[in-house]
Each structure stands twice: as structure tokens, then as C-alpha cells.
Image (cartoon, one colour):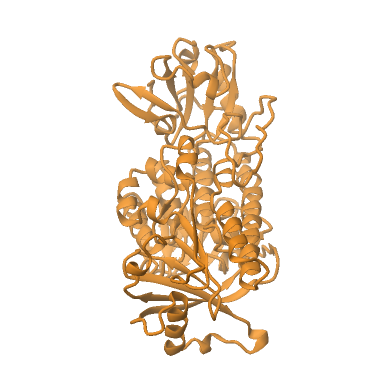
Length: 531
């Protein structure tokens, strides 16, 4: 079997990689050792940036039907129990963040989210659950994998999305940087009728200083919930301590109702970590998701950071595979994503320390809710990250100053940054500048600038008139004669305030970004045209 990309791991990151491969015209095979998608909602928060990708993939409505209402659940609570008098609640500032995106963060439990992603991935890629990769070898031209089915797969590249205990990362001899494990954790999923107890207290996440300190997560905000707590092997603790009877006690203490009718759904042990792989690439194998960086669950960053890995990587694999870019473009994956992965891990660790301090009594509940709520909104981290690499051409400007790089996002079209969201009125309907992007390079320019006559085949030109948005040039930091070139992953590659110097100006720019001459006769897609 020959494919362009072998994807190992069928979680959200592997499935997103398959979706992106299909969008970029790459053949892919995804193998996942488990028979089905996750039965535990290990992740629930879909950040604003990931929701933008969900919107681009055409599944936003489906995800929102499967998730929880933003206004009711994008909040955090603290107390000694869910029903205690000392309970405090703080909601995410949705209205404050609204101008930055056509969508917003959303709560959709991973067990439901994966089903949606798997359906979409299967429509364009070969997705095989219940199939284990038995061995992997690589040479100068590609990778060879043997599967548990007896098949041998030959691929040009491999994406290792095989999780925190990545066997591929280990086999490549790639170490990790970070502290020792932070804790041995237990997740207890249960079914109980407690909605009527939470009027005015509904949150996505609750931190409770009950008899056994724990966190409670909403799974469906109806009957299904999850408690997370821990144990210390150094003090004689063990996962064997968490018998069904003890787990019911923990749930009742967390809710604050001693005789609560509880039905246990599942009990899952796991290790809380915060580490980053020392390298994200070894030859033709690329690490993504938890194989590359493992965050604490505080902040909900892990799954989302991994999906951004896939979004950054796959268009580059496509450009090289299809002969439009040089191999050096693939080096920019690690150059760009490693700093983002490491920073995300660090921020998740900072969030975890707030929780530890609260659970250990170093913070009052009032202090804890202030700190937890302040860290609950992370648009600066989620939308404000930027890349510096050979796939970005600087324009001499500096990043905009922000008071809090974690919390505060300041829109900018400076090269390396995510292209800003700006509402346009086009053909009688409202749409975002982000809705005009796709699996190709996009040149945004004011109508009449002259740039549309110089666009290579693999670039889509989007002309924006003053009637559609009189403020667009200012918000993108250009002029009526300028242009902004946006990469397939939505990050700005280059911008200029000037008209084209020659008909070949943009081709030269593209050649630099792609680390290779552009073959104008072999576009990635049929010429996207002009909008």
C-alpha cells in the first residue's frame, strides 16, 4: 500500500491530520490501535482558534449541536462542594472577546468531538481503527510500516500522533524536557441527577476543596459528570484504592449531598504531566499533539495545540510532495511549532500551580476564583501566537504591545501572525475575512490595487472594496495599493504597502516562502481565481 502520509493515532490530532491531508490533496492512511473513538471525555474545551478550523471544515453547526451552550458553561466555579454556601462562579468574557473571531471557544466533550472528526476524516482518507502499527522504518525516500493486519505500508511521510506515551517518539530516541510527573490522577465518570442543585452555578469546570480535593467537569450538563482527583504513591496511595464504593463517596462529597443516588460509568487512571519533546522531527517522521507536547489539563490546551500542529504541518507536506516547495520548508514545522508547544506547556503548568495552591489551602476561595477566572480566558495565547521562520518574510514592524500575552489578544496582520478577523459585507451577506481563506495561499488586496494581475496560479486573489469594508486596509496594516499574502494555515506570510514592482514580484515572494522555485505550470489546485 502506497500513500503520501501515514498517520499513527486516531485521536483528535490524528483525525485532524487526516482531514487536512484530504483538503490538500494528499492520500493518507490513519491507523489507531483502539477499536473505536474515545469513551472518556478526556478533553472538552475547543478553543476559539480550533473552532475557526471547525468552521472552515464545515462542521461548526454539528459540533455546537453536540456540545454545551456557551453562555451557560464557559465559566469556572470554586467552593468546598457544588452546593456549599461558599461557592463562587466567574464566567468567561464572551462579549469582550467577540470582536476577535467569527466564532468563540466551545465545550464539546472529546468522546462526541472525535465521532464528528472521524466521520469527516473517513470521507476523504483511509481511516482504520482496531489496527496497530507493529514496526516503522525510514530511509531517504520515505517510511515503511508493518500493520497488525499483515499489510506493509509505504509512505512519503509519517505523522506520529500516538499520544503522551508515544512509542514512535521513544523509538526515535527523542527525549522530553520538563518537570517530573505532577501527580497520579483518577477520573471518575458518573451519572446523577444534580442539575436542579446547580441553578445559578452552572460551569464547565469546578475546583472543590471538599474532604478529598477534586475537580468536577460537566460532560453533558444533564446527567453525566466527571470527578478528577489524585493519589500519592509515596504516601502509600494506589489506583487500587479507588473502589466503586470509595468513588461514590468522593462524588457525594464533591456534590455535597451525602445520600446522592450515583451510578458510576467508568474509572480511568492517568498521569498529570507537563513536558515538551526536544525535537518535533526526525527525518520523515513528525511528532504532533501529545507525542510532541503534553500539557496539564488546566486551561484545556493540549488537544487544541495538537490540532494547530496538524494545521501547520500538512500544507507544508503537500507543498513539498506536489513539487511546489523545497525540503527546507519542512524544517519550519519544528522551528515554528516547538516554541508554541513549549509555551503552551508552561502556561498549563502555571494554571496547575494555581489549582495546587488552592487545594492545599494557600489561597482563600475568593483569591482562587479571582486567579482561576483570570486564567480561564486565554485569547492572547490561543490567537496571539506568531511564527518566525524562513516561511515568513518580516516587514520590519514590531509585534503590538499587549498588557497580558496570555489573556489579551491584539489583532495584527504582521507577518507570522494569524490573519485577523474582519467582518465584510459581500453580496448582501456578512462574512469574515477568515471565511475567504482555504487550503491555498490567499492574497488579500484592495480593489484596484493592481496586484490581481500578478498572482501566480497557486494563489487565490481576494479583492476587498471600500463598500465591503472601509476599514480593512487599516486593520490589516496596509494601504490602497498594498497586499497581504496569507498561508494555507491562516498565518500571514508577507505584506506590503506598495503596488507590484514587476509582474514577477509575487512569484519571487512565494518562492522565498516555499524555500524553492515555483513551478507555475503545476499548481496545487486549479487556479482559485479572484473574489
